Length: 461
Image (cartoon, rainbow, N blue to C red; front, side, top):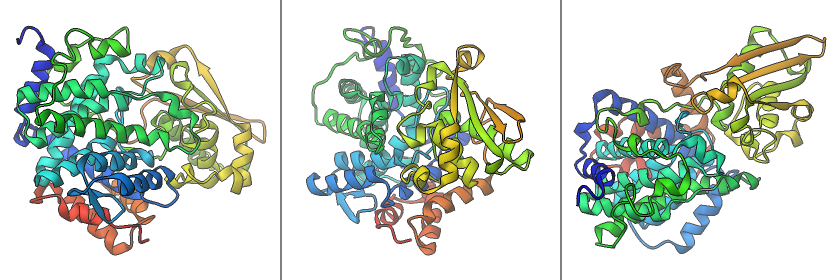
């Protein structure tokens, strides 16, 4: 039996035998940092301008069954599956949560809602919830790397959603206490539900984009809950028959699923924390732009044109994308003209309210690179920004690794300021302070209910 499915069973054995003490101290420490950042962004997504959060919350309130799991921002509890769906959608709605550059993933957006829902349902400790987040992020990363994230993008698949279903299943299996056989089935059921098309780029409301993280969370929770109840499933999803890896790319390699498993935690330790609310592909370019503006003491009225050189393989995501958070022709002008970038800019079109943003947006262009920039993608989201000034000069800067990456981490002060800024949009000062304290103390908490009670509240800022 083991020889029939060595990869699937090795992964299932690791998940079913996992304990929080298996995490190296530095992995748990960074998970705590990532979780606080993700919790702040999750809370901010309850803002009335975030249409995806409003729509999915209304839906869950109407159709969800009774249960112990918090609907964030809604002041009520529902069943775990619908809580994961709704809160997972919120997790990615603001496009400001931690991400994995190499694997092109947003696993924190999926894992925090998954962990909170099942920790409430199973009365798990805060440390166990955090351990589930780390486990889920690691499995998501390994699945994405096995499938090859660049190949997924080339075929129009979204790695975060597809790989995220397996990560959520792993996190849920741990919190539900599944044994190895049950975990094999949970992974098989997650494989049957994997989904996620980049077609969400054609939804200018940006509802479909975060919905896919909600689907991943829902898929993982439902898979684990069904497996616990004895529901049948494929038992070699990564090994034989219609292997899920081969279903999505022609260059899949199962080796990353188990290589260094339990020893290497790159799915956690290589996560980057966003300093900007936008698609992560634009973060190096934003750093380059900010450097040009500050080093040359430029104001936006001195800029005649903005040009971005970016990898051909990823340019379709940033070149005049109808989603404002994914459009270089929108994001770069907003930062140049307004001196900052808020997640609310993704939901309020500044081209309609700010003439300077509209002027720069009309001038902005993306140059698709088929050379060094393209070769570096997706390991690096290299961006070269060139500003043509009104006096005829041109200034250029290139950035390869953005601030917030593990190589260039944000300072503790920057992290605190980000948490304050995003939560201030929906929280009173007292609630904001309480949410920060609950997030920081989650590791020591006997359960997650102090945190979820604060997240349950409707916006009060």
